[in-house]
Image (cartoon, rainbow, N blue to C red; front, side, top):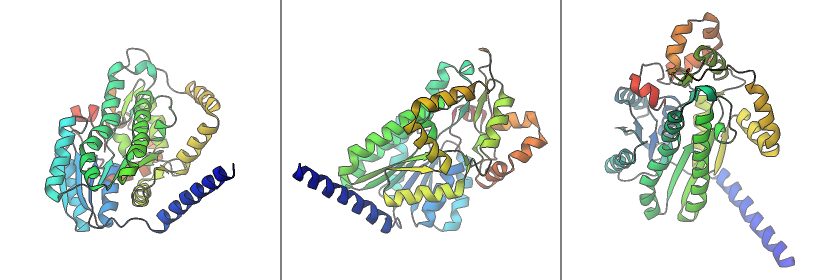
Length: 352
């Protein structure tokens, strides 16, 4: 027992020492090559800005070429090299091509940030099997495919950093976000398991867990069922200062977590407290969410059509809602979220 106690104390001291050193001496990212998926707008663009400030050479990827060019112009002020890559990283061949193009331009990829995603809002009655499949494609495989494409070169160098932007919806399954939550749970599981698998190979994997953020991406979220009611409830929450997090502060925290090699980092006190409460009282959390669900809009089985937030907002034309979402609208203007997207991409693509 004495030897076991000594071993446990020594192991605990090593862990504490490592954590202290990691915070006192975060990595210098200057000169490293960072690849950001969904990097043309919203949080992805803000993460790219922070990486540029840190001196990284950048490759940003998205499906929309004009958006990428606007993002390149935005990043030009930081005087770093920027490669833009048009790719649908929900397809394995395009994810591989993206990594190959970034590697051909810069010689390697040191940091991968998997950020692409979409939000679908609506009750189960309005959800179809296609919604679950689409959510998995957009929130799970867009993490897996780029990661598997970049891992071989990181393993060969025994060095690399991967950050996977997931969601509090990957820790707690939130009503009216069921396909989204299912896909985010899968992404969290992949990210956490990957971190354990590759740690001994010199690769740090960080699971980023955001709550609501003021990015302006509500304009690209897909609303189903009673679309106006769903939009009217969801959008103010994504804009309120006490509920949602400032997206620029969130981006700074993401890059800070990458520099320190954190295994997990929550963005915002709301997400942190919600996850802690759920961890301690999972049954109570589900009961509370069930009570909340009874207050949310219902839908008929035939109300399965979805519409992006910008279309719903145009239909509502509500001065009251505009006032309640002022901060979200300002964020959309600042973070390249206001430009229309091709209809087929807006319904199935990546809002960042």
